[in-house]
Every structure is written in structure tokens, then in C-alpha cells.
Length: 121
Image 1 (cartoon, helix red, strand yellow):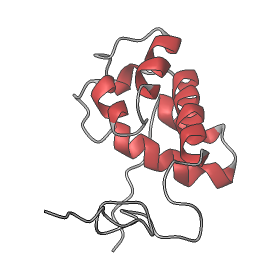
Image 2: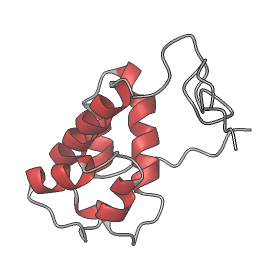
Image 3: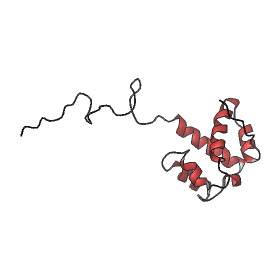
Image 4: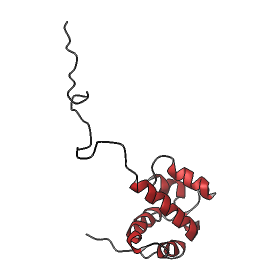
């Protein structure tokens, strides 16, 4: 089921217009997540979008406080945020090797193929 598309206006729309068409949908996802709660502080919104300390680093790089509202961002800051977010999305993550399922590798808590030490009492 598709959700109604909320049109961007102002600085986010300007930043989106400067992107290549293939990046527009990804920018819309980021903007929707950041603008989901208009009164929320940007630091809290970025915590869910940028892993680890990337959000705080981006705020510091742009000279912004974590309490800044998303509506205060300029088009250049939106573009910078998108570039930072996109670089994090494309980066490989730690976890299971390709071709193998994620999650716990063994149900008994040891490395695959390892056996618990027998207990002789």
C-alpha cells in the first residue's frame, strides 16, 4: 500500500532539485524521516538515520546545535546531509559474510563446529 506523497517545499525542495533523478527517491526517504516530526530536534531525528556518531559529526561539521530544527536547514545543508547519509547507506556493514544468513551463527553459543567442553563430575 502506498502512502500519499507529501511535497517538499523550501530548502529541501531546492536541494532535491539539484540531485540527479535517480537520487530523488532516496532523498525523499531521508527528508520524510527527518521532517516526520516538525518540532523535533535535529539531533534526535538524525540518530535514527545516521549510525553511531555520524549524525553528531555532521552537525558539528555544519556548525549546528543538536537542538536545531529541520526547518532551519539551508539547501546546501540538506545536500550535505544527503551526501553524508548516502555514504553511510552504501557502506558495507559488519555481519555475516555474503551468501550466508545473518543472526547467530550457532544455536549453542559457540563458533560453528565448536563443541562445548564435556563436564566430568
